[in-house]
Picture 1: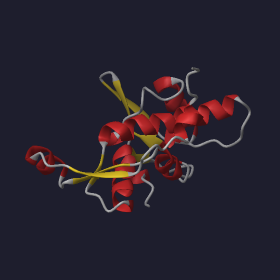
Picture 2: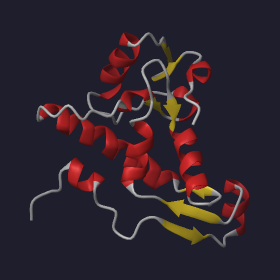
Picture 3: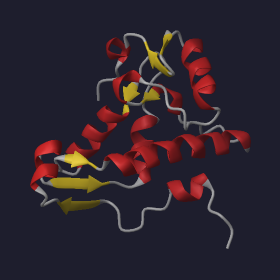
Length: 156
């Protein structure tokens, strides 16, 4: 069987969305509630493609919006990270095929304004695209962040 493309993964929802009741008291306390949603990849695509030039969003903001959409307390962090990367790589896949349906994935940052090393073309690629749009990227140790990213957050 051939490996799925990122675009095939993007359009595969399976049984999602799924809201699960979490019963572990430590998890409930840590995440602020018992209802966790696992949303389909297209929910992430829908939000990420709305971010206009000059604006940014973090994975945290996306997860909050998706939790609200499904009346859940929070969104699964692990699948959120995976699905955000699927959106980015699916967009790059389309771009390489000559398709103009590009999602500005580089405008989606990790929490605290950090660049995402798993994006197509890695940190250097995301840094270049962000700087082209006027954002200042700073290095802290081995990690990269957008300076004053909070001032440029997209309000949903």
